[in-house]
Length: 222
Image (cartoon, rainbow, N blue to C red; front, side, top):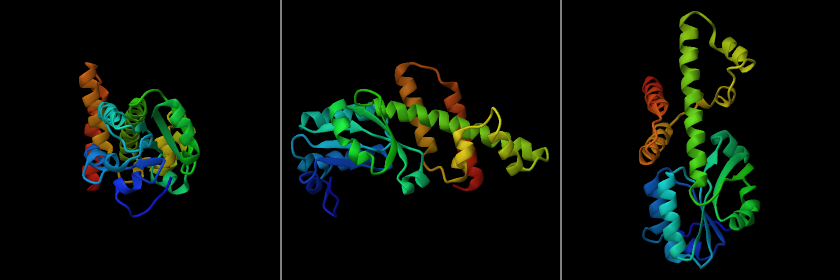
């Protein structure tokens, strides 16, 4: 690995592993295949890890195009959020060539304490998609639970401590994830809904979660 102020193409010509972390799928596309993108300067055999949260379908498409250029694609989306990123204790959900993934583990361990390989290219994004669906479901349930509890006169923090010791406890509640900004929540749910449509699967809870999360963000002015 290496890091510098070089363009992605220049960086790719000097590295064995390049990791892309961008907010949206079109930004990943540009970093890989745009002008001065990674594919333009990559040496044959370069491993590219896509750490962004993008659609599994998009990951598979980009992965195929990278392979055609002699590049080894991995999807390695990240979980746990900003405080864990700052502490270097993220979770990596991997997809792609298992041998290449294993070679990259020492690099991943620089910022992650939990590392999983789920299958072929795209499997990491599937894992992240399922994680996000369940995460936002928990945040939505927590929000509505606290809302009615407070309305009926129970102190929120006292109730939180009780719930963390009860059968309702969940990671989102304990980590305070819902107290931080949620800029990607609706995008995450749209990925799930689009994949479910393509697979002809009905996920009605997902649509409700998207609307609850949107309402929370509107109330908070995000």
